[in-house]
Figure (cartoon, rainbow, N blue to C red):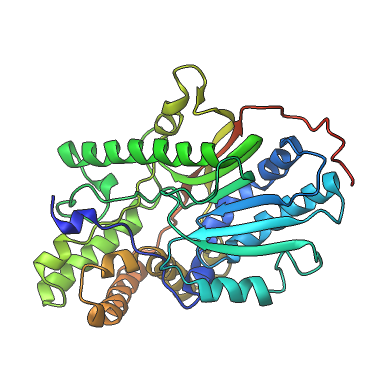
Amino acid sequence: MNEATKRVHGVMEGGGSYNLHARIPAGGAHLALPLLEEAVRKITLDGGDRPVVIADYGSSQGKNSLAPVKAAIKALRARIGPHRPVLVAHIDQAANDFNTLFDVLHRDPERYSVDDPNVFPSAIGRSFYESVFPPQHVDLGWSSYAAVWLSRIPMPVPGHFLAIASTGDVREAFERQGAEDWRFFLSLRANELRSGGRLVIVLPALNDDGVAGFEPLFTQANEALSEMVSEGAVTADERARMVLGAYPRRRRQLLAPFTTNGEFRGLTVEHYELSLLADPAWAEYERDGNKEMLVNRHTGFFRAIFVPSLASAVDEVSRRVFADRLEEKLKRRLADRPEPHHSFVQTMVLAKQGSTTDSSGADQE
């Protein structure tokens, strides 16, 4: 295996770009807010005054974390009253744009701490494929659209940059890596959760027929990359190294660790749901007919989330030029063939074995 296949995925595009263009992940997270609030009502809390810990696994630049964390804190305050401290930790890779994250936490008018002096935001620059907290430390975990990224890329994808477009040995290698990483992610979170804690997970999905919903967008981007090779804008070797570490899973793949006896490392599945998420940019296009805005939203989404990983295959000096050129070519293609990108999303609630009700008198300190 060469060095290129060992690379972990790149972080989202910096400078607040992800915050501006991540409307689809925000929509998926919104589907899980009622589940998050219910999870808060079910977590086991002692009657002491230790901080209640909320972990946001895969925060990126923070904007999409505000509404979920605010909802969780509101539900918590109904149980613990206004004075008990709540510690919120946002976790992402060390290369994440933490400057933007801290600016959001400090300045955004929708920040969850704006009217609650006993909420304490923090951040941890570490991959969630490592231990992030001491054992039995987290009361409530939240992870939205982050665990779709693998810890490593097992091999190149001939003719494409995405594993779900592959077949045969290549697809099998990614399936093995996806299964291994999913079990490892769950094992780490199980160790960090307190007994009676909850972990709420949102993930882009493949439906039971293996469809993600973004295939047309990925096809257009792949064709644009091929055009760049033909023009000499990138070399064939650089193109061959362009592989995304994103691996959406099917229902059976997510539930596989729990099939033996209904639990995995002390975690049980309280809720699982597969949903179709409508493309918000397409809904606006149908309403106002603004094709330029539609194209800008779709290319902005692709660039902010996926292009940094693709650009890591070229030298650092060339990355900005590469990103701009790919975006330009993708815009032209999408303008010629506008179509919606309705996608599939999975929501899960996992419970750590232990009491699911608070009988300690912790409500309303």
